[in-house]
Amino acid sequence: MSGLIYEYDPAEALESEECIAIFLADALETGDAAYIAKAMGVVARAKGMAELSRETGLSREQLYRSFSEQGNPTLKTMLAVLRALGVDMTVKPHTPAVS
Image (cartoon, rainbow, N blue to C red; front, top):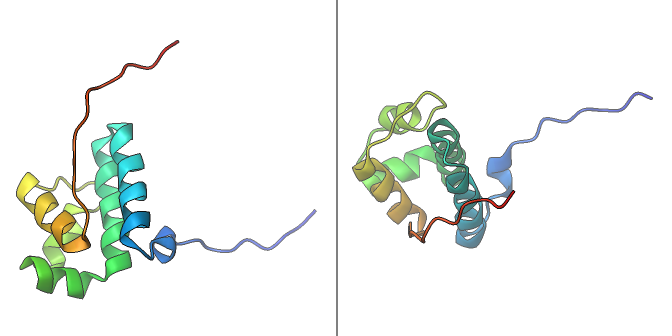
């Protein structure tokens, strides 16, 4: 069976602040710093790097670098970007997985 394979860009599905919040919450739950940075990059692309750069005062290059798979954004950068995206980061008590 042969079928067509289409490229999928998750940034295209992030059309609202609620979608962005759910996407980022899922990424944060992984605890994987590289995955979280990459997910932030997807969200940044959904918003538009140029617009995000204007709203945060950070350069586009800094945003791309910080939110690449190898990126390591500072807390200051994360908070500025989250604020510009219209979402907040919150914490809750950790509940270990039940085996």
